Image (cartoon, rainbow, N blue to C red):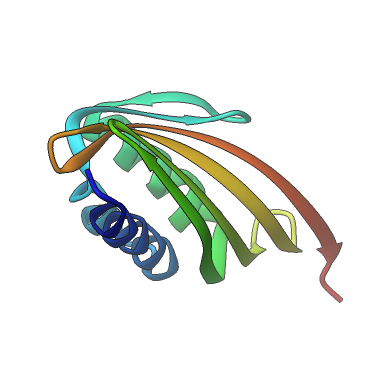
Length: 125
């Protein structure tokens, strides 16, 4: 995978997140992909990724803004850095985060995602 292809996939990831669209995010992952959030554990396959997104992204977030900052590609590994902000509706917080994601690549899609992030939280109201 070259850098332009990787940027396109990560931009689709960001678009899917902002639109809260699990169908769109699944288009960038292989059917057997793994998705690891350090606080939520590992999700396996499209069904696991969809369940995570429906619970976490759709179920507890709104007003999501995503901005890709940096991208590195080395053969079958993509590392992306981004900033995101959103409202955590479950805890009534504004969240501002910086994240680094490491993607495994298989063909023209991602076969794995491992997230590492730091977030700042402020109470709403």
